[in-house]
Amino acid sequence: MKLIRATKQAVKFAVHNYHYSKFASPRCYDYPIAVFNDKDEFCGVICYGRGAHASMGKPYNLFSGQYLELMRVALNGKQESTSKAISLSIKMIKKNCPSVKLLISFADKRQGHTGVIYQATNWFFHKDIKTVGKEYYYKNKWTSGNFGKKIDKSILNKRDAGGRLKYIYPLKKEMVSLCKELSKPYPKNA
Image (cartoon, rainbow, N blue to C red; front, top):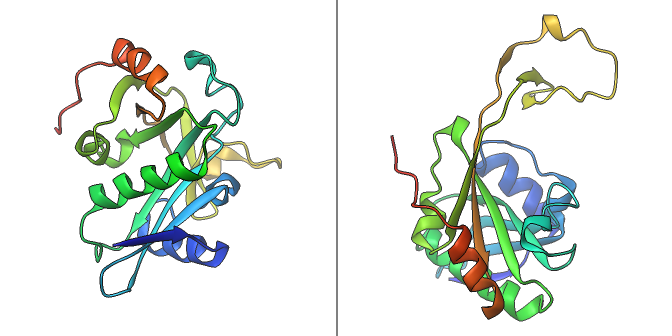
């Protein structure tokens, strides 16, 4: 398996074709990694970014630039193993982003995900995040309703907002004890 920095076009293609969200946020382009199998076939991308909000590192006493969020794993299944691809991507981050001390990621409970890929690669389970409110189906995706324009939400399909499971992975030795302290038993598949 070979991993290299991904192009913007590779991210767009892989996320649109291999990820359930079909959406690559602008932060997916911060540090995207392309995955190729041993036959040199493109298998997709693993995208790391600065995170959804600036205070994401606050619970760990980290500032922007000291953490990254694993934002998308958009692979087509032709890779040797998803967990191996993630492990190799973590090694790339360690080598090429020396100021990053912690990785953060989320498993989407609405999709039935429990974070099996994070468990297989020894991430620490941090917390179960209960999301309240509604999501609306707008422009072919589910969103929290921040449309930027006045839209009558009553005409849109809606659902209860799902929850997320938060995982953390220390890249520096000084983060290991904090991760252990914050960790909880892994959630199980339903």
